[in-house]
Image 1: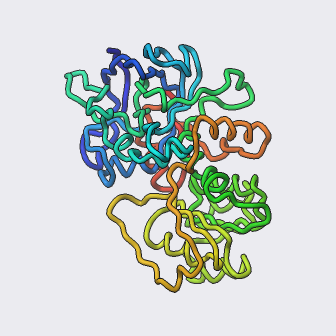
Image 2: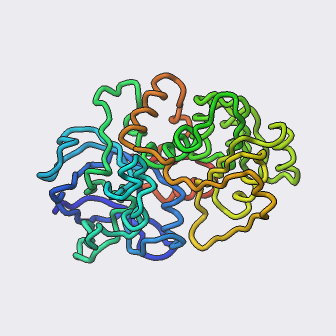
Length: 368
């Protein structure tokens, strides 16, 4: 068992406290990773505030990247010294996993939000020996040392001189969610129109993917003008302030009779409704954002006329295939994800959380 630094949430809505924690050695099917950097996601804040599980005290974080330091006896996909991006867990046995949809695993919630391994144990403890909720999205990357199931590690090329390796962590969640929704789940064809609601990391990844897909009208809405400007720099053809009273009408006018696709990267009742309203007959709305548990929305039956509402988790990707593809897009100048990122020393995690919540920073990345 090793001792390392981690940020712990000990009470609902409380600050992240950087403390020493004990981390178990990897089991037969697990990998130990020294985390070089980790993204901070809105989902981490929802869990900090106990709007989402697991309970506290907990080590959160789920956009880690780093170097493998040890492997279990049954691990064959990575070796000590490999650079990896960490991704959510999946069981590998259910119908969705077996048909190439591991991010829609039948056990996804239990495996990623329970705060424990599938057998109920945790690899994370305080120095007093008290158990900590961990294994958040399979990793808990707000710990400098993590233990991850082999299914949750994605090996990336060792020759990444042209890619900022310490910034790759968000590809394991926010970036693959937005880009995968457009390219994998919606499969937006060239010439199609798409509306992206919310210009955070997920929404801006969707914008970049829509440009890669060849969409000819890419409309983005957000409350922050600096994010709308960035969206246009990244490929959006139109940027509209989300607070406008005429938002839906303006989007419909811009897209002709409505959009072919929409991506709701916010995930509250109002934005879900807007995502459906802006569609043309036959259009599809992908709901990828999450405002937290316990929220409901209603849609008039007449509004569904020919339209589809589709829930998408993590972009419906196979991370081991899609993350290297995103890296290739970046190398080709098509996916400049680094423009979304602002880095912080790990000890400044609470400042990063504040900037994330206020919208000042699109994607905070904490450097160990």
